[in-house]
Length: 269
Image (cartoon, rainbow, N blue to C red; front, side):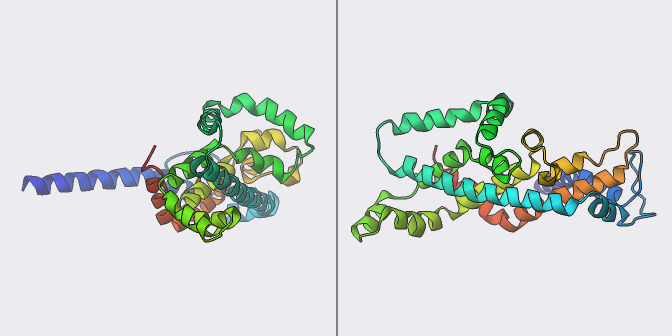
């Protein structure tokens, strides 16, 4: 009897926490379907329409900014996974002088706040003449976190597997493409989710590195929905809903592989 009471209590507690977590999203969705110039806890279903969504796409060119965000996020995921997996393979499975020292120095860069390097990064992209390009937006997203995540995963793979491939005459490139990449797929999926969300939600760096409005991302476009004197919060919530959906859908699709990648990458280290 006591065990059943405890089970019911925790079930109700989890249900309450789930409803609390869902509350902001339900409020955002309902508000996006109304013409609202003030914020309040109004959950009535009267006067709901998709007018705000139509305005967002028609008057604020959200489709163009949405495309920019997708391009930047996809390029960031591809480059980060490719470069991080190559570097992690070298750190985990290759022996060279100063390997551990270089890795820990590289890993220490994660402790540097991103705000500290905004000015140096701005100088670099202007020196390389890549300001107002997609390259300026996605290249800074390649960092030590991806290398660390995949390296932890690779350290659990037996070296005998790679040695057997070399004995069979398999070159390093073929080992990477045919053995390493398929085996680290869960880690790559986890890194893809992290990179996509980071790129999609990035605001400060695009604001600094992009001055051409045609290259604006969705987060920058979202900030333009707020008026100088009055704000249609329904319009803002419509933009926020459209911005929220892509990473949410991506996580739902890759949820199983994402959890597996995180779990397996955390076995050692």
